[in-house]
Image 1 (tube, rainbow, N blue to C red):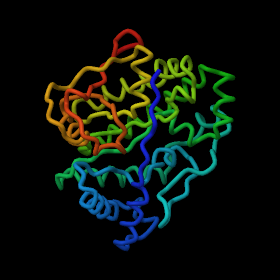
Image 2: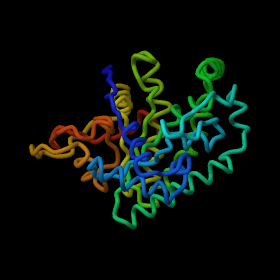
Image 3: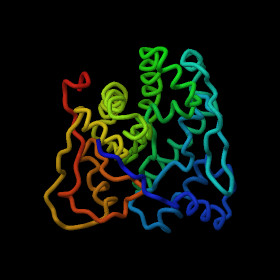
Image 4: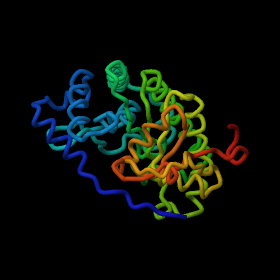
Length: 295
């Protein structure tokens, strides 16, 4: 299996400097729709990007499911703390999403609606179910529970995945152009080749197919390249060229042009959007029906 080196990015420190420069209050700027909108416009202009990349709170989903988070400050944005659930049973019995989580998610939906009205295409930096689960449980507890009961693991993955699908569908209806799915556990060096194939077939692929059905043609799914590679190597999906044009442009512009035309793609990291490529070098992710259940 291929491995990917995640590109080094100073984007977070870049955003933090803009927050300080503009005098935007923290941690309010990470949760209030009006402040996030102000910051989003500044970041887009300064970085000269085709998309508004949101949210600035990258643990929205974890917080909504009861996870402990640091709300952010002038040095860094919101981030996870220690896991709150010690077992799958505890997680499945918890009341979620939390009231605070609902409020934060609602604010992001309102923000996306405003961006859509203003003609600002939104790229949501989202997460897959395992990524979120690893923010809710300490990794040692997650591994222990997974080894003890695989069926319960799959039940928890579906539970978290269904929550994410409901949330991302709301964002899609708010006009979001692209939803990125990062499930960073999907790495051959981390899981090993055999476990990675099982993960791709039984966790990632079912989640993504349900998500694509929910989003329809409104919103493009952009995968972490690690996920794309895992899906292809496991036989869940294949890569199909999106075009034959040899003109080189930024990968960001190609993704922008694929919205409404392609259901799922993910060849390069969203942190590498300024890479120059041609459409003949970029591929969509198409599902191999029959390997992972219903299309």
